[in-house]
Length: 392
Ligand SMILES: Nc1ncnc2c1ncn2[C@@H]1O[C@H](COP(=O)(O)OP(=O)(O)OP(=O)(O)O)[C@@H](O)[C@H]1O
Image (cartoon, rainbow, N blue to C red; front, side):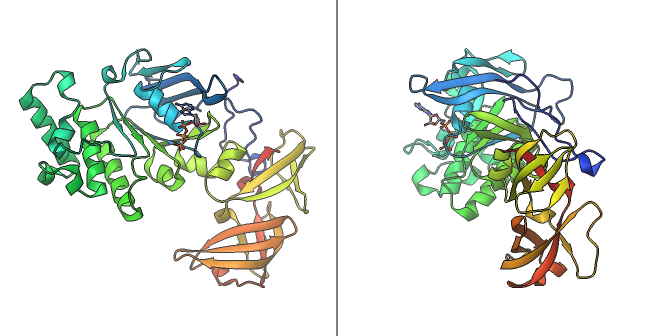
């Protein structure tokens, strides 16, 4: 495990010096916006958990900090360790090593019910024989609240999720979205220090998912509750979160704002897992020149080590050069033969073949490039500042 800190992935004023290169990414978060000098609300310190007699490293020195009131989405493919990390925060899983600190208090050794965290799971885990109100009140009794207080809190929580009218209904007489809102009410009724959500939308159909997603986000913001949300759905993570933590094989590869994750992925994995990208194989030559295997070279960053490399480019960063016009000064113009055009309403995706390899581009539907058709030739340009280059 490296102890070096993440290199800044901020694009410098000099476009020739852009491009991220992170040879060794420590499993530690970059500094976060808003965290400031104050104690973060949640701090994970090198949380590690193995399973199967040590064979599976489910969480590998996961470290991060989260400011109060922020929503963190843990994003990654199946089996990357998101749930294990969440369960360690909740106290449902003991870490082999590492610490969980909430508001400056080390809670690592505390059982779940002494952490004051509200947890919402994928399956709503409601008690079928109990009403919505009784389900929402579950968890309050063991916190020593009397009956009247419990009822008041449950009613308040059901009102928060807009279900006060259904307080006497049992789960089977409710829709999936309503049941998930009862589960959310139960988690909020304890007035948690931390709200933990494990794929809470995955059992809902696509339309409901969007509305429950918006409800969770606006409620979390309105209440100022700090939250950790586990998902494998990148659109969900980018749309909901203040910070996204991308996990891969037990490691936290990058922790940053959704924009930063999308525009400036810190690792190859993040560049390929989040969003679409064109991948150029090639090598970095002396002086930080990236040369694509198929041809074409761009000055990307002077301090990059030489050797085999891959460059990633987001589709919306491709520049269309109208016939007769000049490409932007520092850009590499490629002669592209359009192979496919896909209209998606707001945008048009243009697939093409170039000397540097296949290129995926995306333009707003009203853009001049949107009229390109398969078989057309076009000049498409790549600006060095838009390439993210990593050693292969
Ligand atoms: N109780 C357990 N016993 C053995 N192996 C486990 C256990 N829990 C998790 N694992 C393994 O640890 C790894 C991480 O699992 P985890 O559930 O945290 O991943 P995940 O990212 O949440 O995946 P998913 O999105 O599929 O839920 C996987 O390889 C998984 O098989």
